Image (cartoon, rainbow, N blue to C red; front, side, top):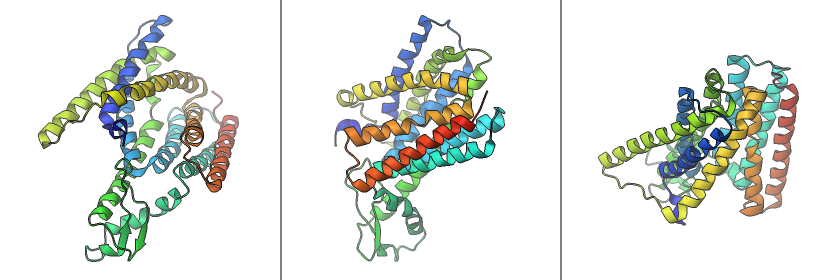
Length: 329
């Protein structure tokens, strides 16, 4: 496995935060400097979210993890906008229906990108949970196929009376459960990501928020990375390697692209509201799917391609429906 693929989540997030910090100052070319503590809170959410997202993908796989957090985040954002900030809606029912359609499409995209075999993996959650409660003498009736790639340590399948590798069953089962929990937390935090920006409008206007956010991203990353290092030292575990040659480029590019997306998402949220703007931003999943299809060649079957196409249509249809029946300011 290439070194960059096994990069520690905290280290990868550190590179992203550095890129975010460096690019945030560019807005001072046309906006005045203003600081708000809300930017620090937003940065804390983002940094924590980034680490949790990488962990979720490693433990549960990209299909399950991204489907869960993408679907959950749009509902969390909708609740904030519609019921906390009281943003005006043309139709609560039709807006929620649009979100449901988008969520179903996102789940379909996740299954298609991770392979059609990703569907049994979702259904096997109940079996994996059952393994945690059966007695040790009964555990051998389950077969947990060993995963060679440590970056994807989730159960590929479970069949009775087929033998098993000792210890893999419980270990991989726990990893998938941890991955799902991380994905749920990512969804909750991602849906709340723009909330500090809404409150910060009393101190800063629009992209003026980015400077405070950039300062916060670097500060929070140093705090979390320092805490993480102390915990590793206390436990006697080795410190994570930086993998500089293979990681700096991709990590900094990820931070740069994210900063650019964050710039435009601020305008989308301020102009359209949290309940409409942020769910529409989550259509980024379609772009990820296109990368998976055309660059990484991860969708290789006709069934997977059909599922991806149908799911993409659902996401776009839900987005159009939400833009019609969503907030009007």
